[in-house]
Length: 368
Image: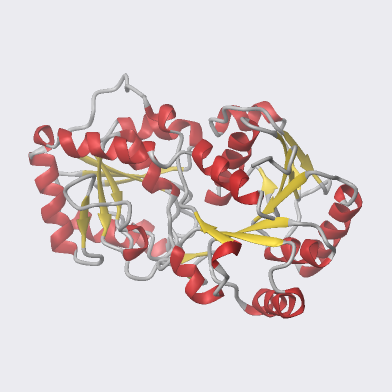
């Protein structure tokens, strides 16, 4: 099939740089698109030049990044309207351009204005966003618009026609994790990377560490959302290491035997306001698999098509502290016997890479 699009414009309501998973995914996707087509990322605001992003986010291909505003902007309705009208002025005459975004607002207005685009959806719509999207669907349905769902389960909510959407998990750059640490692997240590929002795992690690005084837990991420009471009573074997550049993650993971993903039954994003455990496809999951270390994760249905217990990871029931302690001890004491699981983890990671994801989207876009 002849490809319809000569270039890709990815539109994001981000202020760059920032440390969110969305910023990593956006930059990684643009880098993957740029491997095949001329690519441009348009955001609210960008402070750094491209070389900064390429270095700190392990980007493999060059693309243009343009900020619409001269300073960072909050995500208000007025800001989004200004953003949209600036975009329309800038992009309306572009032909053979594929527009991609994670902004429901931008995507729906583009569709109403006759600009074909793809909207990537990771969560349910809430509040005014839901009302606006439902109104748009009532007026023109899916005309000028196709959808990428991070989880098949999301279509239980949106009920799109099969021809209008594809389901794609997130991914990793497998080759970036071919990293041999200069430091010796710590004997009894576990590592966690990511946010500390409610349900993401900190609460579990806090309780697990109390029962495993001879094991150290190294946590990387912005801890500003942790309650001060927890910080003041932190077990001595938990080390809050702060946020590190994404470019350091392969090295960080290489220094430990076990990668932890102890999600609770309810997982929250956006400072604990939105419950999202049914749809998560965490970036750290694919990075952990790529590292070739042992992943111990909560047994959640949202990613059980990827993670298989005792094949490429160990799955433990969420919120079962004693079961987690038992599994961590087992892995530490038998690490040398678990090479097949580590190899299978790397093999799984190979199936989920950014370039394959980008190619799937480009192929799907030809149906627009």
